[in-house]
Image 1 (cartoon, rainbow, N blue to C red):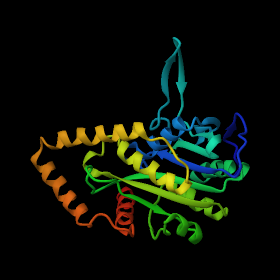
Image 2: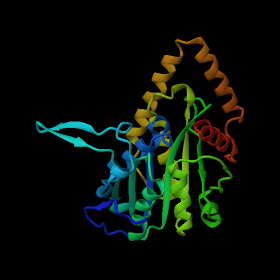
Image 3: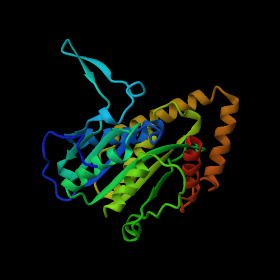
Length: 278
């Protein structure tokens, strides 16, 4: 497999950068992972330098191209997997869409960029639905297979066995290449599955800052998170059953039944989430 579907527009001048990747799809409950990635691109003034041509990887009846008008002219926007460079932070950002076909070939395109830029690490972002309250801090689960890096970052190896998504495939392939990897997942309340979650995106950014030791402006995400929490609370207040469920989750969280320094509890949620999709 060769990177035949990778289109470079320029070659960024980076020094063993970290690649941060997020993919729309089931990896992205509440759009939290891709929201976090877009936030990074915007706040760090990242510049696009490469793209994966999606022709071989997508069913366009499922991931349809979009017609847009720009200066009165119509043009098509196809499903994209764009690489951008945040020069000041020595970061590469990959925002994409989980492919429908040829996952190994797709993964090879990502690894080709990692090799070309001599990437030092790949960090993947994800989000899943879980039984957690929207009124409490977002639980973020992290894993890392390298013992030394895991100890430094406060992350443990994953014990998960079962079906996986493109995030798991990319992490496994990168490890086989000898590239360090870490994965961060935010828990999104299952009772607001259709709402985008800036609060989960903010939690991913805050945990990512710890991993990268890189400050990232988050004021707008903090404002959006407060509004998100307030709006959901107002909706739930009108439904007695939903309000009872929320109170139960809050009690479990406050008593430590949901929050565990060892992320095994959230890891179980990840495993169940994946099995439900199998």
